[in-house]
Image (cartoon, rainbow, N blue to C red):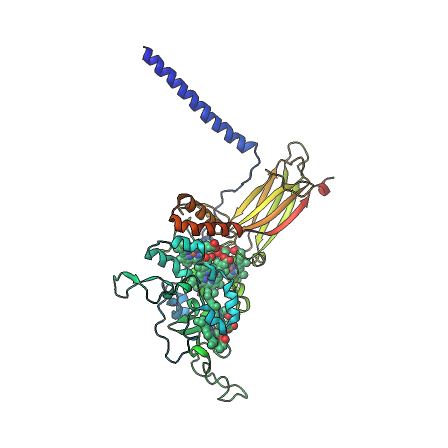
Amino acid sequence: MMDRKRVESALNVVLGIVIVVFGGIALKSYYENNFQPKTFKQPEFHAPPLYKVEAKVPDGTDPDARPEADSPHAAFDPWLADHFTAPIDLQGEPPQDWTEIEANLSPESCGTCHPQQLSDWQTSWHHLGMGPGMMGQLVDANDGMVKACQRCHAPNAEQYPRLKGSEAGAAYQENPEFDADLRVQGLTCAGCHVREWTRYGPESDAHPVGSETAPELGEGETADSEWADPNEGIPHGGFVAKAAYKEAVFCERCHDFREGEGKVLNEKKLQETYQEWRRTEAAAEGKTCQTCHMPDGAHTFKGIHDKEFVQTGFEATAELKRLGDKPLEPLEAELTITNVGVAHRMPSYTTPRIVLIIEQLDEGEAVIEGTKQAFFVGRETTLSLSREVYDTRILPGESRTLMYSAERAEAATGLSARVEVWPDEQYRKNYENWLSTNMYGDEGSAILEEAHEAATNSRYIAWERSVDLASQSE
Ligand code: HEC
Ligand code: HEC
Ligand code: HEC
Ligand code: HEC
Ligand code: HEC
């Protein structure tokens, strides 16, 4: 009898604790949901897969076709289908009569004769793509992982510490041609322009595509004019002109995943910038990746990390909807951005976030704590890539709006509305996660600390307005 009583009272104590704890949690979350100012207001939105987007494919081909070897894209030039292999084959022996500077893959050596391309490219993310965020993950990485990542980030075989033998089933072994300095330079000139020492480049007046010999002579031209042999007198044996350098499909191999490459979440690949572009009005009008990312041949490849460039891509407006100075009527405002200059989703990859923010300001223009609300434009997945959390990326012509609604703070005299860009956000979260679990060991973590800091410091404000509340009241 005594025992049962004791058990009962013990159970009551436990039950009491459970009620207090869970009741507390429920109360707390009720309070947070209803009385606390919301700092994060992200609607569940999942942008539709590409096949549901109206197709404006410039070449009239199947909008969902991806450039496989036998697709219309490769038919455009079969040379391109083999241009970006993983890795790009070793260059082999250079022609014997070449000078050391011609037979040199380092970008600096190309730069002695192509200085503008070199200085442009040195500021680009093609060059920076083997930074600490990548190198931290490659510490102790197996050969398969190195290959999977370097095929886009540092694709030449000379950049691989180890290579597979050529026979079927051959194992990886030390690469005698490995060049550690070239590796950290990322996607170099050679990655896009040099195969077996032959230079390939865009068509020029003196080098029409397909002309190994002189074009027909024009009025007043003689056979010994500059047209006679387009390659004569040019270092590195001249070059082969390829129309593909002016086409968007040239960028496809690294800016799009194909069948079987990478995860597919909600019927969308993790990266499909080229396929997005094919469906845009700009593509139909003949604007290629190069038109926007290589204006006048510039090798800067500006993108989401560059404020002025990103500003060419969107328009923003901020509007006050309600002053919030009457009882029970909250302060309301809207901040809208529209994709007016990005010929793919804005942003395209899962890495960046474009953040719409409104918060209240006091008389001294200082932000009033607790009044901030934000809307995240981008595609968020779980860190394990198991699920898409939201996808609010913006197709050309589309808009997204932050609808601000909050109690007006007593001291509020204005609003700050702004568009912040966080170029490296998804990776920043990864770094944070990996650092907390020491996933890449002490050596890897030391490098990833650097990457985390850089990914935090790369944020910037791309657009900002303040809205005066006082002048709006009657
Ligand atoms: C000794 C000087 C010199 C060096 C070194 C050199 N080039 Fe050139 N290259 C030239 C000249 C001259 C031309 C022809 C004129 C032009 O188009 O700039 C040329 C043409 C080219 C072209 C074709 C341009 C076009 O109009 O399509 C490409 C591509 C190219 N070089 C890439 C490279 C790369 C990559 C390297 C380094 C691996 C390199 N070059 C090293 C002098 C050089
Ligand atoms: C061999 C693979 C490869 C090819 C080909 C390639 N890219 Fe890239 N590109 C990359 C990689 C890798 C990155 C990312 C580097 C990083 O952020 O670490 C990148 C990044 C970029 C960025 C982003 C810059 C930013 O601010 O984030 C732009 C823009 C870009 N490339 C444009 C182009 C264009 C245009 C072409 C075609 C003319 C092209 N790329 C061809 C591999 C490639
Ligand atoms: C199909 C080409 C491709 C492959 C394969 C690839 N990447 Fe990338 N990577 C990119 C592009 C493109 C970007 C830039 C996206 C942007 O600017 O928004 C990028 C960005 C990154 C960044 C972020 C750099 C920054 O901007 O802060 C890191 C780190 C990175 N990649 C690591 C890796 C690793 C590790 C692997 C292998 C597991 C890998 N990548 C495989 C194309 C590729
Ligand atoms: C991501 C690939 C990529 C990389 C990396 C790259 N280029 Fe290019 N390059 C191109 C493309 C594409 C064009 C054609 C651009 C156009 O005319 O629209 C081009 C054009 C050129 C031309 C012809 C210039 C002209 O005005 O006719 C030269 C020379 C050249 N590149 C040299 C270099 C050198 C040197 C480097 C390294 C410092 C380099 N490229 C890195 C893709 C690349
Ligand atoms: C009409 C101009 C335009 C064209 C055409 C265009 N882009 Fe962009 N791109 C932009 C602008 C502006 C941004 C910066 C805003 C953003 O990231 O969405 C950008 C950003 C990027 C980025 C970096 C970050 C990201 O994930 O959004 C990459 C990579 C990129 N473009 C690749 C390409 C490729 C590859 C093509 C061709 C298939 C292409 N772009 C065609 C204007 C253009």
